[in-house]
Image 1 (spheres, rainbow, N blue to C red):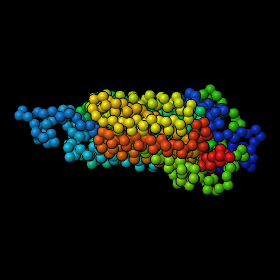
Image 2 (image 1 turned 45 degrees about the vertical axis):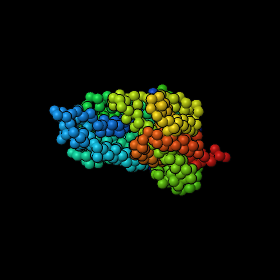
Image 3 (image 1 turned 120 degrees about the horizontal axis):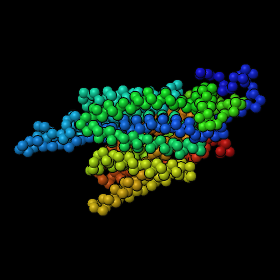
Image 4 (image 1 turned 135 degrees about the vertical axis):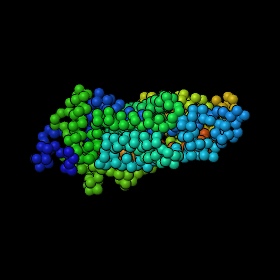
Length: 518
């Protein structure tokens, strides 16, 4: 039950707000570390269930690769065929039929080819808008779980409607709406999956969420191979899993105890922590209660600013900009995420455009990223977030720059391709690392709002990437190289977050920073 009273046990409130003898008030990180367990059976089950949503995001995002592909054409005219742009009028037919893709059904070739890229850009524009909207809603009244449930329902609805699109412009509009609900799925799942995990295990667990995204891409290739003659059927089968997730998974996951706490629902937060402890074979002592990280042992605020007091239960992107500390972090995070996205999506498009079997290429591309995830997970808590982010971005930037300096065919083309492989390896490592790093830079009360803002920047990078790819062979590598190097240099200005508290409130973060500087 929601309450606006101070986070004091009932007995304390009855006693006039005085702390019981022996009563211990701890923040959630301490409660997990000392009592409930940082990563036990409860967290593992919850993590797997919630992170499955990443596969849903992969389905809705990457389905365009197969639905909007340009199938092979065959000449059926006895006397030979004319201009391919004239399609059937010149004797050409689509090998898999006109219903095999949007390109075949609506003739998106030659002068109409730009519409394929436009639909992709429109989708990512929707992602950019939705990431900000649902990032704010998940930090406020809707919560992490509620927001994830809503976006999955919307994804399924818009995806199924896309399968009924009568023409290209209706299709593009529905892709915009699908992007609006898809853009926040990964962020919501990431935060909900990692917030109940203790500080020493949170980094490695957070890095593991991206296996689900890559696995979703690989699964998509398999599903698409079963429906090569109907892009509409493909949209149906990639949308239904979102409904299945809402019906079969969401009821069995818990809302974040951190969200409960900042919303002044201490009883609900403690209920979740006790459930974690029971499942992990541990117990939370009866004399332990929860406090926000800007409260002292008596349950009062550690700062005198009334505005900070009133905003402890909810926050917005405006609150991020009011603080000098978080304002600087957000600006840097936005720039770094944008640059990383340009490189990641740009290099990914180059790999997908290889003149090989499309289904095999997509599977190989998704599997090639997994070693990067493993490497960062192993090194994350050894070297820290900041050095690893700098290293992986510079690795990608340097090899992309080297690729831009290589011209020619034969072995030189192979060398340039190898530079691209190393580049995407490094940027894939950076891309998923930025999720856990960014989440740790901001307190619970504005975490999803900040992540939503950086996700918007990443979507902007995704919109820019295809425009860079069409610039030729060497220029894209030069752009990707510069982006990686500049991004790596910007990381130098961010603080290290390894083994630091995951703050709940803006005031708690400010006090923590002051204590470190002092």
